[in-house]
Image: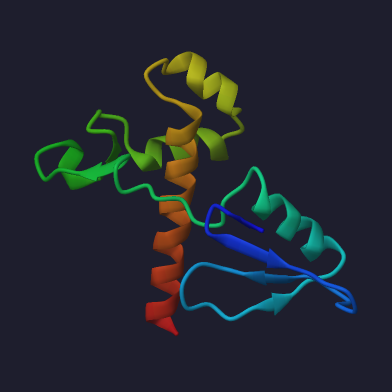
Length: 122
């Protein structure tokens, strides 16, 4: 079975399913909560989001901060709204030009940036 770049194999005698991620990653065994996560990854959720077409950086706009689709709304603005307790629905009501995918792209961008930062420190 293959969906969204994730391949799940299980067979007779296999105690746990193997989850193969996109190019170059080693298979891992999952059980319990992690198995439930693997099932979610197979279907509705994707492990990696391509935010390159959503998050833009332009030197003349908002001092070069990462913005959403060329608008003047920055990734940090959205993250601050979420951190202050606003729900996605409240953000979308306040900014009708945003979509749920834009908010997910902000979270994915922040997660990738944090991974790069922690990798450079280590």
